[in-house]
Amino acid sequence: MSGPGSTGDGIEDGADGTVEDGHYHLRLYVAGQTAKSLAAMANLKRFCEEHLAGHYDIEVGDLMKNPQLAAGDQILAIPTLVRRLPAPLKRIIGDLSNTEKVLVGLDIRPKADGL
Image (cartoon, rainbow, N blue to C red):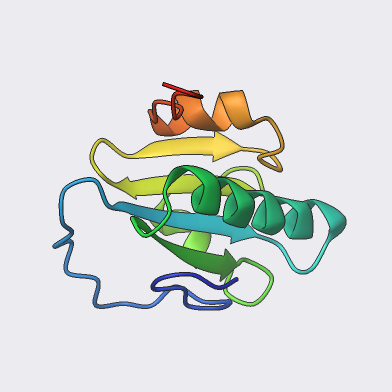
C-alpha cells in the first residue's frame, strides 16, 4: 500500500497524534493476502486518492503476522478499517467496495460533481 505515511504490513509506534485539520489517519486490518484483504487494500487506496488526495495516511496491520494488533483497536472481524483521526474513532468492516458506505462510515462529504 502506498501513499503518504504508509507503513507496509505493520503498525508503527510513535504516532504522536499531531495531524493538521482535515487529515485522515487510517488503519486497515487484514489477515494475510486473501482476496478480501487485497480487495480492501485496493478499494481503500482508490477511495483515498479520489476523496482524500494528499490528506491521508494509511497503515496496514496484518493480523496473521501480528495478531496482538487486534486488541488495540478491538478488531473482531477482518478486513476492518479504523479511522483514528479525526476524532471520533470510526470502524468499517468489509472490503470497502461500497463507496457510499465508506463515505458515510468515515463521515466524508462527497465532492460535488460539476458545481
